Image 1 (cartoon, rainbow, N blue to C red):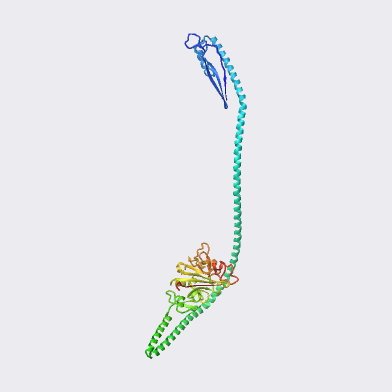
Image 2: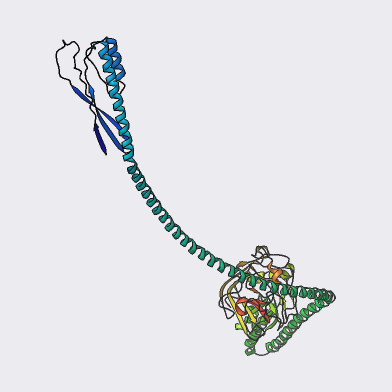
Length: 496
């Protein structure tokens, strides 16, 4: 709001222009605005100024008066010098009185303005406080709403975290229980294994003593047996040849009709001679030569000058199988070294391992198939057959390669087929980084990463064959901890 006040000062002097002759002239009045700012309000005062006053006096008094009034709110200028000093003094006193009155009026106006402005300022401040309070309340309400929403979200997240934590704790508890159970079973099995190892060590010492005593006798008996078999076969064939030769001599003295019979008999003699001198490379050759009875045969593998004795299965799936592994009753210990598994051990007529080197030489003669015969303690039997079977050399760790699986001992193979090395307790070639499968599961086998099978494991009798991880197992037939009753592994040519 703007409030205007008009204050007039009346002077009786005349305006005499500088250089005038004392004629009567009109007094020209000019107004000057004086503005005061108080808070949001502005006050303007209109103060008149006198342009000229009559009087005389020296020029120096006029200049001093004009210069002193030029710094105040109202300035009175004179164009003509005052008439005399007395009139100048009166005029100055009159002006001072007017200035005092003006100052009092200004003070009263200032007091009035202050009094009138106090309620308005209080009201303005009150409105401002109310507006600020409302704004702060609105901001506080928004903050409370946001805080409540964040609290609700945090509660939801906390509930989810608690649920997830409880589930994890339950899983950890279950895992710890199963781990404790497995540890107990492992301790039991470890104690059983230690006991069995003690028994095995005692048995090994006894067997070694017996072997040292009987080894020479067995070697002599085997050589004598082989020599007698060869001599018997040769004698039988020679007797037949001599009989034929006698018949030929008798027939040669007869007429020409007997000459045809002589030619036929000579052909038979040559056939018999070829049979005597024939060398079979596997049981399939013996079967094709007319020997269809399962038993012991002598075969020549590769470039071997001396024959080796093998067991030929002439009954299973068409016959012609050369057996290189057989477990029957647990009478033979299969916890052997690398060299023993290489050269072979056991009796080919009973439990035995023909030897990795012999099997390598045998499968190097052509393409062979593998058949695994299995039987459990409940009388059930099954088999697994592979169309292609190859065994690498000792330099390549007698790696096993298989292809074309079929059979009744599971829908998939329990034997690693991708080239797994052979491992024994003194030469570890498995794919387990932090363990030795041949020591854990015993025996020599193509363990891979301990694998799903081990037909050379510990032999457990009925009633003790359950939950035996180191037994004779074939996973997809009777599971991972069932020890089987009997097994046999055999090969024959793929095109048989």
